[in-house]
Image 1 (cartoon, one colour):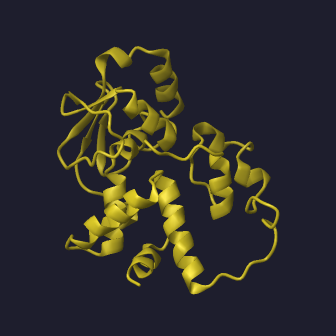
Image 2: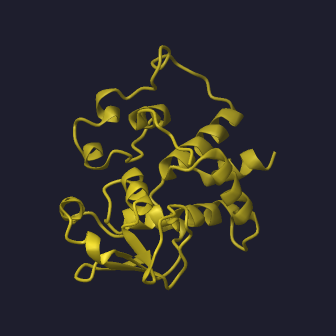
Length: 208
């Protein structure tokens, strides 16, 4: 399974904003954006003129990196979004938000999306009582995501749940902290997705 293996902090610096890929570190002064708020590489601090295509490409790359998906996956999600009734850009983000690894992160069961992806792959979660180890699994309204019984008492999850206890849960999710179960009560609207990107630029890029 292909995945990005280089420093994720470089991705945040390239996009010029926090993508929250390092969990709790992103909220401290150790964050790469805080320490070096310019693009990586030899010419990272130079002034660059951005073309219309460049803006569209950056919007796509930022969104793809935010959710941790590969180019082929992202294109597939875009094609899926074009067949839905709403605005293509809004539908694309809603699809990305419904990925199981993102839902796990939004529920506070992981400190970052990369960590959520790893925990899902290792089989720590169930959907409607059935073990699912595919991060790209698209959850549906009404489904319940929960931590496996044998995983709940692990020191790893105790530390994660303590670290994320103060983080707000997405409005389109309902979390029962006693049973450690989260239910998808709706698909997120654009206003409920905290991604500072103009999704219409992505649509323009793929429409060429």
